[in-house]
Length: 403
Image (cartoon, one colour):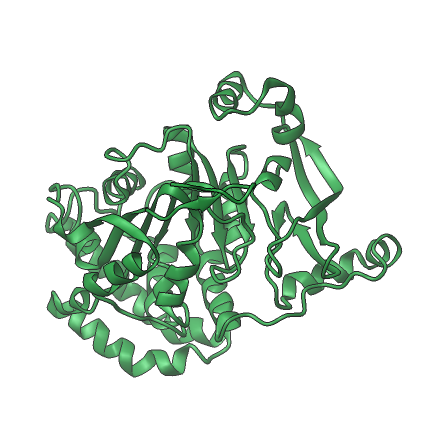
């Protein structure tokens, strides 16, 4: 974590200010190119050393109003409002400092939204078992994935160079890192699961990518503080997709953009193989999500060779441009994503667009209605994807509104 992140953060329990206490840090000087990027983002030369050239490894974030202490563990701020195994491990490791330096403070002891701990568990297993090797991302080569995501997110039509960007559901962090580096954007990436550890491990050297463990329903961020916010393939895995959209929709500034992509019913009907997988999912997922992680792995292991074989067949038969072979971890990751989550909701474009309008968004763009380049696989447009611009006024500090 870098101090620069404090400019974005707000307490997840009451929305107020957080206080940073650093226990361990290490120097991380910027390169000349990174220094130029910092200046282009509006960071003053005199602030670069303080805000970006210290990598905070261990510490805490204090909410003095509520008396809650949020850990910074392995370089990642853990801003979940409910108890977690990471917070307990942090407390055990640093018990003496907590007792002597922060007497009267307590670790988070609130409640998440329904099923949130189950979501954390299943997606932590999914992402911590996934090793970013730069050879494939889902079923595409990384360069093709990034190319498809640029089109899907509309980055060329709505430039984000020098902008503040938020990704809700960062996963392993590859897309956020790519956008930050290629667009000169400052990106905050949030994830509920321990995918944040994989993201920090793979892309923590990027000073303009800030990784935070937090819930989409209690975002520890200042509302209306981002130019572009996106959530791709995430909110349908929560207890209520519409509530997730409403929460995330608070983050863009007036005139800022929001993009959300979720599963659709039609996507599962478009090929015989997908219909077969959907039937298997309906039969097994209600049982599998309840199993302990090791038993989930045992249960889905027989599917891994099938995923690997099918993906190899698609590539050999000349599937979509940029198809990649599945390695073992890729196939296991894909199987976990379908068969182990507690929640998988599916929605239409019309539903999603309606939620955007209710949240005060206009100038909507429906992904499935845009002309699709040949290099974009059908899966990107077969699901529900909507982009919109925030229309309502945002209050200034003095109470007046600005449009």
